[in-house]
Image (cartoon, rainbow, N blue to C red; front, side, top):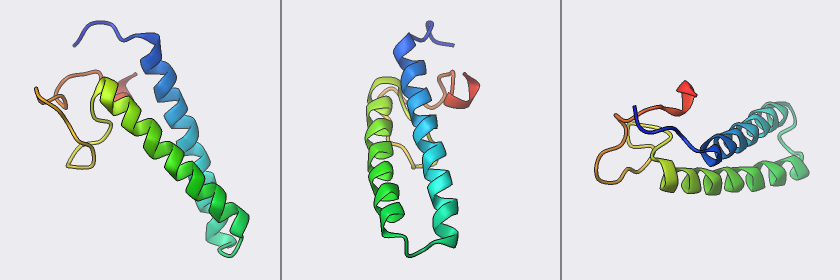
Amino acid sequence: MKAPIDERYYKMLYELQTVDFVLVELNLYLDTHPYDQSAIEQYNQTAIQRAQLAQQFEALYGPLRNYGQSLTRSPFQWNQGPWPWQV
């Protein structure tokens, strides 16, 4: 395992988890209210926010997802832990 992770790692990961929760809830709501324009706008804004947070996180700490869903840099980082679900 790498050296200890700084507090920013945990803070950013928590922010991502919070935004993911909002996206799941909005998705569930939109399943039953597909014409709610306000919810659609909120979902889209939150999805953009999530993409930006993920990009920032990955630039600092490496990929969040594997199998081509996240870019990596040299040296290959996916085999270096801890992985987001391990913290």
